[in-house]
Amino acid sequence: MVQLCVLSGKRAGTSWVARRFPIRIGRASTSELKLEEDGIWDEHLLLELDRKGFCLKVQPNALARVNGQPTSETYLRNGDIIDLGVVSVRFWLSGVNQNRLHFREALSWAAIVLVVLGQIALLYWLLR
Image (tube, rainbow, N blue to C red; front, side, top):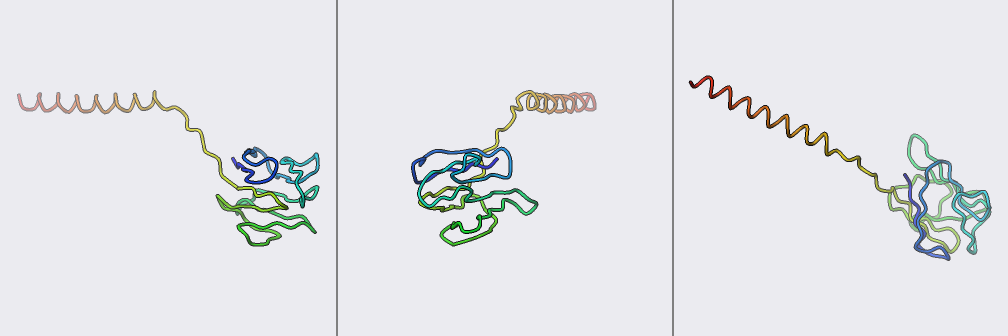
C-alpha cells in the first residue's frame, strides 16, 4: 500500500493510505486526497500504478516538484517529497502486516526434534 504523509499546510502531520489506483490529488470533491491550500488546483496530480511503478502525472497548467525538481511526469521512489502549492507530501510505501506463523513454527521445531530423536535411536540400535 502507498502512504502519503502531509508534511506542511493545514493537514500537516496526517497520513493517508491509498488502497486503489489511480489517485487524484487536489481541491475537487472527487479527489481521493483533498488539499485546500493556496496554489493547489482542483485536479492537481494523478498518481497511477503501472508495470514500471508509481507514476506521478501533473495536470496541465499545474506546477509540482519532486525532491525539489520541477516535473510534469515522473516515477516515484520510496521517500520522495512532492511539493504542490504550499504543501509538501511524502510518498511512502507503508508497512506490511505479517501473518502469525506460530503454528507452522511449532510444527517445524517438532519435526526437527523428531528427526534428531530418530537419529539418536538409530545410532543406539547400530552400536548395540
